[in-house]
Image 1 (cartoon, helix red, strand yellow):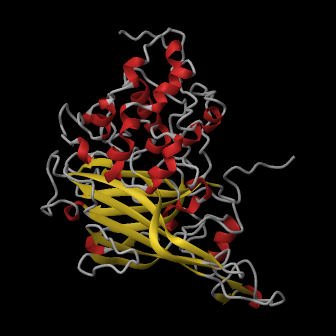
Image 2 (cartoon, helix red, strand yellow; image 1 turned 180 degrees about the vertical axis):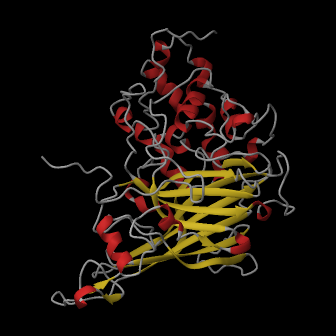
Image 3 (cartoon, helix red, strand yellow; image 1 turned 60 degrees about the vertical axis):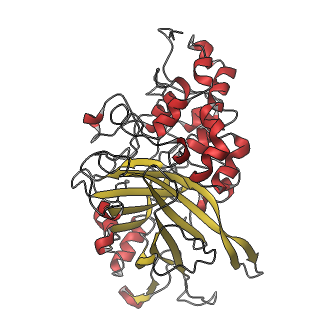
Length: 491
């Protein structure tokens, strides 16, 4: 069957996804019913690529908390002290069990308590300092100082209480400060005057002071950044009423997210401890991030809570748009509670017989394209080949069996790859262009899912609202609460 396009048909074709709600098309932003009520544990994006300069480091950026309004105070968004944030790394083609897991635990030091009539109380709290006129101020807007600890675990930890085997678990960073919220110019100036900020301006140099060098273990950074995803949410939410480029609106524009950036020496990830010089299955890793909470929460009358019992995973993400565009709504919560090792057992039918294709047919997309939708409705082994890099960067380059297939972001440590895509998704520009932004992730994956890549599919939003950085931690600065984000002058 030859597919034909009407010459006047715009290529901004998308659809209302009945089995995978259109809300999902912001990577992993509120993509499942349960996690939509728990934003601080909600994965939003994972990026991973081989450093383009030295080729001996893996750069990983993984995000949580979708659609953060920059001015969302006085209790601004932050990492949750009650969530176990993890980055899992698999290796080779025989198993999806993690060979290394990086765990991130956050700790917030609360502000001191003041009587309501205490002149020393106020918005700016924690460390008391006297400045001009003897007036007392206190550091850290909104009253809390947050730090984090990073633990590297070799293999899988199975102790639900976190009593790790010291031979496998190593604390590689401890009490590292989280980069602060970008409140606005007055807050930054006050903190600077108190000697609590290295700059009166929240700029790249200031944010870079929160990069922590872990020596032989690499570098780490955590804090708020601009959300690097871009998509026409308004058009998608209005029953796929999408617009062409120039009219489409980036629904994620102006929002922040909370990011963890991790730079890992590649020699720590390969089986032989060496940096590979070319592509191979042995040196192809799989990356996915997760968030877990304790099984039992007990609320006290004073507003405090106790969290006990084993950890229960509540969110996960590897490749972009899998839970959003592939998994049916009835299984989205189950998907977040399971691991990639069980994806074939639990969800293979969604990959091989995509719900999104059936929905496209139901709303007339394939009729408009004059295409036979049955070409794309079943036996979609091409989707498996795409996520397993089977033909990337050349035909037959990788041979990952179905038993080791799951929602992990595959990165061949011997192949150059780059940010801002940060996800080696096959595209028609070939390996010579891998040091460029490889593709618009939404467009590429929708084109693959709907048409096996035979026709371009676009949401009309083709770039981020802020330029990315070329250096660690790569995502752009967070939007400022005072003058940026989504506020507009009141008439």
